[in-house]
Length: 250
Image 1 (cartoon, rainbow, N blue to C red):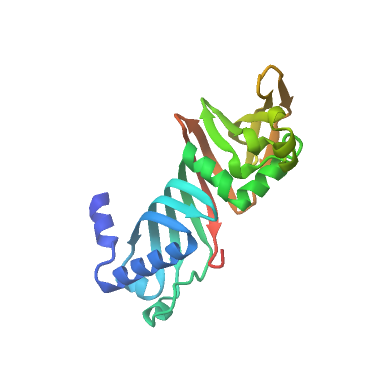
Image 2: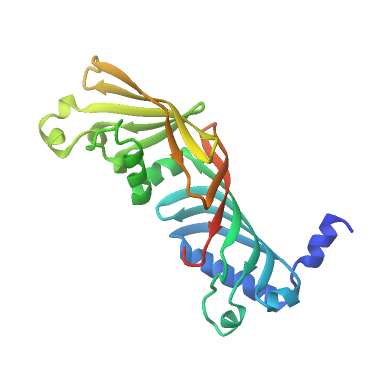
């Protein structure tokens, strides 16, 4: 039997599959702040789904916002999903009964990265902690811009973004322009590597005083429930693939 025929045979038919798909859509939409397109494909026989078991689920989304993180595209692939089907049939919200190993693919544009840095408190706190020995405490991530230059990620702080409130009011003419640049890649032992880490500083208005500070490589270990397998920066796009464990109360 061909793969296409097998997939067609396993795709649920009738109201049960449709009901579960709609319940999954409602649950996923409740987890995000915004989403433009959401497609869900579930595979499994009706008798499996009637028991609350879904062999595999594929989720495709465009322009999603999750906890302030802006995503151009997202794809999720999960297997062995167990849900509270009988509660769903009674009109109750979908609930995951067991953790699900999920493969995830994400794509973010420069605009997505800038919006995420500006609006996600979760990401801002992580960046402050990560670069606490590189960036001054006074930088304003809400006003920062993010660029991709070749394989380097650049976070730029200009004008008020690089100044404390007191500097803005009394010493605006000496306010700094700061650009943090680094190469980001997946290292061994399930770690994220920030190499060639440097901070370029220029002082306005003449921009005659320029300084470049270089820092040691920084490694960030992931939680045991997260595994990043691939990360690329190319043509203004940030892409990554990995695996994580999704729990019903996440």
